[in-house]
Length: 235
Image 1 (cartoon, rainbow, N blue to C red):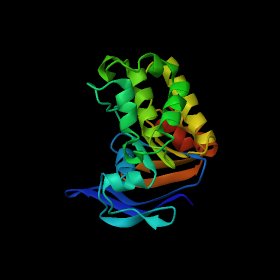
Image 2: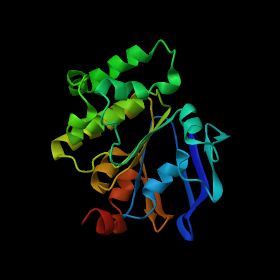
Image 3: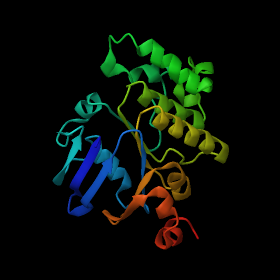
Image 4: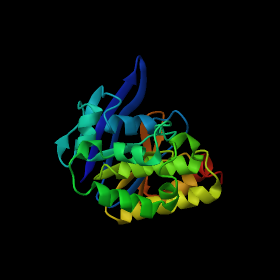
């Protein structure tokens, strides 16, 4: 198993954000986490990437414990995090933003090759490579955030609400990109408020409710689950 969360707990002061959450991610798969606002979805990703310290449990990546590591150390292990809200560097150019993703790879001969690969995946970024990131549309900034994560040459990609605030046509483009990334050998852990989109993309799904896993299973099966339909699909 590539990634394992074993009964992890995260507290914010006296508030328990995650309570005994266990998950697993295998290679070349898309695993989604769905749930209501405040259920603990983003906190789960932040725990994996070292941004939210654990109060209990453990996280293993390639069989090695990574809980307790600083975020830069987690990133150096091969875990890239595309945060909610894109968070690009607004005053830097598109190309400069992308190159920051390769910061831990300085000296690698493959950086220029990977930059070309990102531009092939997102031609609009190449067209705008010298423009400041703040001038991009929301969809273009999301492409930039994904491209920046890809520049780290990750073994696992964490994505937090990639469709948020985007036009439907752009959401479709981002969805195709996520499929391409996973089919290219980089598994994805996807947190997504759009449960329909998430379950259609994913191989396996977890439902978080009040900081605990209430349901899990193959995404197609959960898509047909009566509770999921009523609570998250509006059926």
